[in-house]
Amino acid sequence: MGTAITTTKLTQALEWAYEKAMDGIPGTGSAKEFAEEYRRNNSTPMSAANSLIRWQNTKAGTSGFVTGLGGVITLPVAIPANVASVLYVQLRMISAIAYLGGHDPKDDRVKAMVFTCLAGNAAKDILKDVGIVVVNKVAMNSIKKISGETIKRINQAVGFRLVTKFGSTGVINLGKAVPILGGLISAGFDSFTTNTVGNVARDIFIDSKATFDAKAQA
View 1 (cartoon, rainbow, N blue to C red):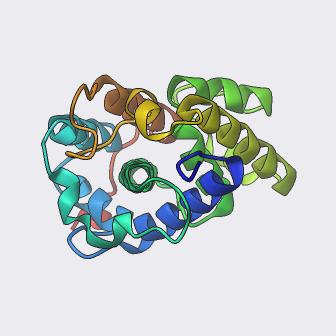
View 2 (cartoon, rainbow, N blue to C red):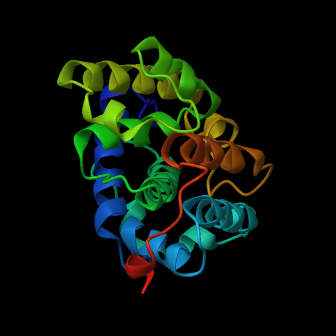
C-alpha cells in the first residue's frame, strides 16, 4: 500500500525533484550548471542538446550512477525512492535542455512544459489538447501566452499520464515508463526511454536554426 503512487504523491514528488534540479544537490550541479557544460563545448543549442542526450544515454545503463546522489532518495513524501531518483535525474536533464534553448525553467509556464516532457511521446498530444502545437520548437511567444488555467490543465494531464504508467505497483512499472540512470532499476533497463524523453525535450525547447551568442559563451 505504501508504494502505491497517487496523483497527490506524484505532484509532491515532482515539486520536490524540480526544486532539487534547480538548486542542485551535493555531487551534482544544478540544471543550469549542467547546461553550461554543454554550451561551452558546442556552437549551437541543437548540438549541445544532442551531446547532452547522448551522455545521458551512455550513463543510462551504468550501475551505481545514482548512488552518489545522496539526499535524492530521502524524499519527504511516501513515494518509492527510485521514483524520486528518476524524477530528479530526468527533470535535471530536461531543464538543462530548456536552458540551452534560452528558456527559464524557473518560470511556471516553462516549468509546466518541462513536466510535460516526462510523458515522453505523449507530451505533444498533451500540449495539442491545450492548444499548443510543437513545430521545430514551441515558440517563445506561445509559452509567454500560457495562462494559469492552461498550466493547471497541463499539469493535471501529465500527472494522469504518469500515474497511469506507474500503476499501483510503481516500483515495478517505473522501469518501463520512465528511465532511471543507475543501479536502482538496472536489470532490464531500456535506454530507449532516456533517448525518447531527451528528444521530446529537444523538440519542444530547441530551435534547430539557433546559434549561441559568442559573448554568452566567453
